[in-house]
Length: 200
Image 1: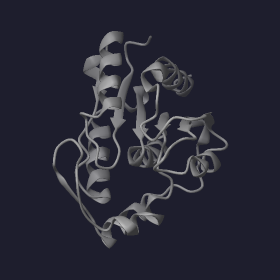
Image 2: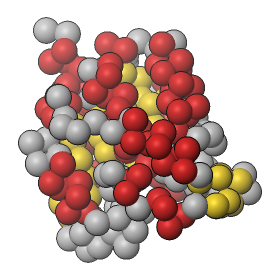
Image 3: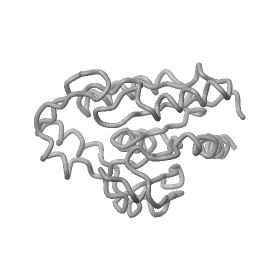
Image 4: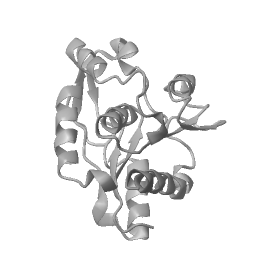
């Protein structure tokens, strides 16, 4: 294990750093001895402000040793950052084209963990469209992990978009991604392998 790996974990819509996967990632990094290099920001703003915040955070981190993990909408954001900064990213049941389905979510929504109110407006949807990365320029930077039993997102959209990436399709499961903790050693190994390639 490289002592230099930094991880930026991006949670999903209406989620937070207190989510199960975020806490499992933090616990794993602690067990591996780099709890001080795992970053889990609370994504509480609209897409444009969130991305501005994330890019400012990336600017403070060693990009050559940084890997991304993104879940659901966090996977959409991680895709943008990975393409912009040439970073390796592992996406967990990522949102693909979320702007196409958010019209039914217009209005205010309460965060599951913090009671923070997220307002989905037409501007919110337009800001997401600006962040779309289609087609992918660097599919090799991605490991995409989906479960066919995802009840929130159609896993086939991710399978199609990331067909040229390292794609893992698990049968069953759900949107939270069952067995995520058991996947963390493979996630770490992927991020380290791509970082190692970039510094050759």
